[in-house]
Length: 437
Image (cartoon, rainbow, N blue to C red; front, side):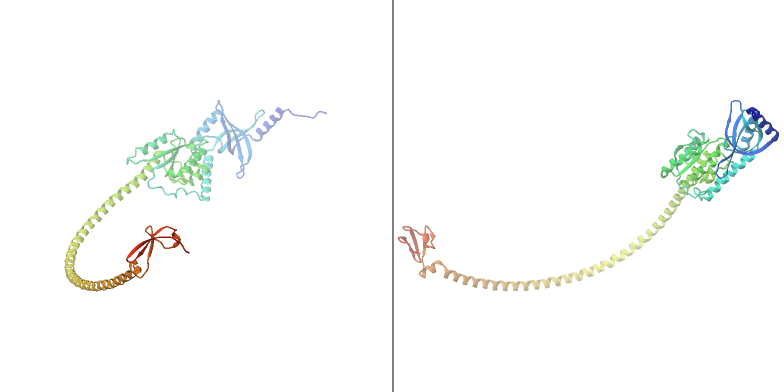
């Protein structure tokens, strides 16, 4: 027996009819936009998703579409109210009709949108980021940094082609005080999906050379309010809040205060206002230096005038005391000279007496020494005479010589040699005839 069955189209038509029967009206739905795209006919196709607030796991998904005439009206209205284009990643409250197509399946057809819900979500997200930064204790860290008095070395994060960057540099260069500023551009994308990552990368490059700069300027000239979303991100905010150099923001909107503006050291409205802030800060320091210079000159003049008068008084006192001192010293010198002369004379007399006494003692000692030496010489003379060869020869001794040399041993003589024998009154010549031991 053949079982009863339905074709796929029949089943889909049945589902379509059931949905249209049970969901005949339009409904307000809260969801997040995803994969928003517009085709060449102006129709907008997207997905609506719902995420778990804790795990961020997708809990529901539905295909959505907005017909061209409706999308043109709703997107203009939405951006005008929120300052944010209708794009992916937005929390929205939309009025939809529920539809099911036999071929394309289930979809939500958007017929209206409530921009106040999205504004609330954006504000809620901003408050959550600020609360998280405060809980982490970093919200006011950058504000607590001290801006250097001479703050003229500035690292700039901006798009190199932005008019705001040119205005910033021009304002610094043409300041009315003639102050000199040194700037270094660290290029970054300042709008779009890549802006957050690009600005953080520029901050990391500046961090590597932080000792060369006094402050950081993050500037962005003009543009739509909708392009400020990246400046509300937690990741960029926490980098700026904890950056070791003061950050001055100027992202081009007066009425929109972003999280970046709140965590920065100083917020200015525009790039030109940022430049004016730096000029004013340095000019204030410069004016204080000029004032200090004037006060220093005035104080120095007063001091020199007082010291000049004091020196004049002192010079008179010195002259008076010097004259009296010289007079006293002259009298003292005179008295000392007189006493010295008397003392010298006495010393000379004493020395002369001592010299005379020494001379007498020396003369007496010399005479005694001469007498003793004379006596010694006489004794020596007598001894010499006693031991002289002549006296010895007179006593019967003789001296034997050979060839003019005294012979002291018989061993030095040979037979038939001639020898001389000296007596006290003459000499004889003999010939050796015999040697005896």
